[in-house]
Image (cartoon, rainbow, N blue to C red; front, side, top):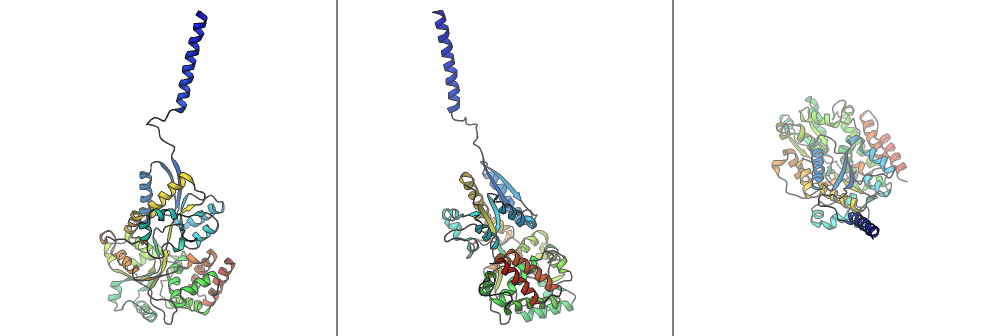
Length: 438
């Protein structure tokens, strides 16, 4: 009996131990335990020290603080190398969950490659947010009916005509509204030893994005350009486009730009202009941000902004700038489940109402309706913000052309500045675009 009692006690103890082990597996986590974080990756090109880049990075940092349940891997890639980095991972179908994408050809190509998925859910959940975007804000990001694939974080306005009011007043000239007036103003400033128009075209996209798109649209009209870009009913060797290149050549021949314009970059040109060495500069909304961060208030107050002059007999509208929804955050096709939910939260955090205010507050143009506090932005930005409300918007060339076609325009304008002819340049552009659109 003693032996039986002994083994009974052992069995009881073992049973209790097994029960304890089993109970440990099924028990709920203690209040101190934390669930595994959702991992989310995002790429963007806001790597610089300009106010807009700092504002967007600030939004990302705030998102991290607001969402401790999300482990965010954010990579800021410099602008010059961003397109190539994105193209490389796109070719391998290894996109980050969320990534900065330009409107037009870049986002269209990624869509055609099956690398994007819609973010329409955000618009449905936040109808008031969607309705506050300006007309056309989603057009470049809508590749399927009733579906949108990004929300613009800003407006790419590329052809403001900035001018130094002091230099104009001191030299007795008025702001040009016609081509003949512009050529006359250029002559006056050259005679006075003042550079008429600052240009930094070392990176050759500058002349294309800031001058030729808007200038050519005044000559050819928008519909002609869209047909030529699609190679459907128009060609870049058509007389109207050769004429548009001819107007650019007129600027070159009239010595509108400072010597060495192809050897200095856009930032150097901005500084050349703001220091009073040039009377005018044709540039985009990024200049508003750059000058707000680098120029003195006294310098800023001397600058005003308008549109390029009209072209005699042109088929396009005159009171316009080139631009549109510049870029936004896109969602990878491969992102699903909890990671997709986190990605949508991030996209809204970077393009929602508070984000639009923050980006506008950095003196960057937005396509979003809001009350702007004049005291929180530069006087120049406030002028440009109000000008945008009164003008039409025409296409930026490289947003519609293929990469090869856009490069041909960029190189062609440099060629014109070095003595090339409009006819030769037009043929190279046409050949490049035709090869790409087959």
